[in-house]
Length: 259
Picture 1 (cartoon, rainbow, N blue to C red):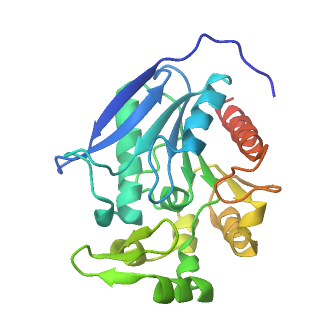
Picture 2: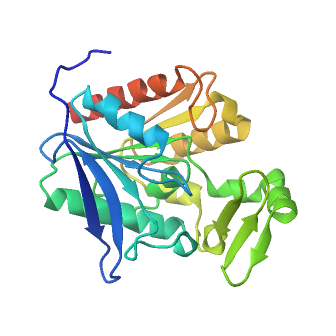
Picture 3: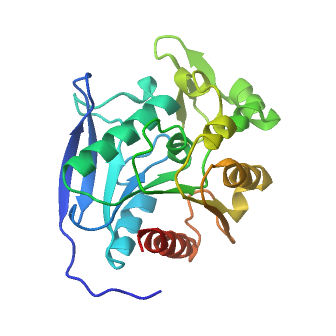
């Protein structure tokens, strides 16, 4: 892929007000709003400094693409708690971010969502962005998979005080009850009402179920779509060369849509 020679882009911390809430979405803008902008949204439990997003912002810089990496929740007093977060909240936050960057001067915006944020993109009510990219996106049909049900039943305990499911396995997990409720009508039906050109990327080693979900998005989104599977890649794309292939594919799509 052609590398564009540019001076290093400047990074700016951004706090985006969430309407009627007193809360904020935090982010890091690399570049400025005069360039094509990719909003980089993390998976559930992730934040703006996740390796996948951090490295993407630097790769896209070389392609003349500004980025805004975002955190939907965090420790700041004005940030949301993850226990109050579900797919429709995620989608509304994405719309809030797009409204904000357009107010700041962005004329062309692509929203890139990894995992749970990929699921949330197709729930966007406003669909006010110009292109979308789903990186190994979650799908509500996954809640009905036998293994997923077994994992929730065997590995997690519902804690009423937290209104969340908690697991002490491995490094530990916390999943808000809201993740498993309030997502009707589901990914497939939402995709049918989604009218933004979308690149769907799956990691080959995420398994056949995830690739099936990727094909479902590709077949049901009501706009131009492309489905790519990154070989020898797992869900976080941390295998040697996997991130680079992911970024190259994404940057190529962004440039094609911007042209």
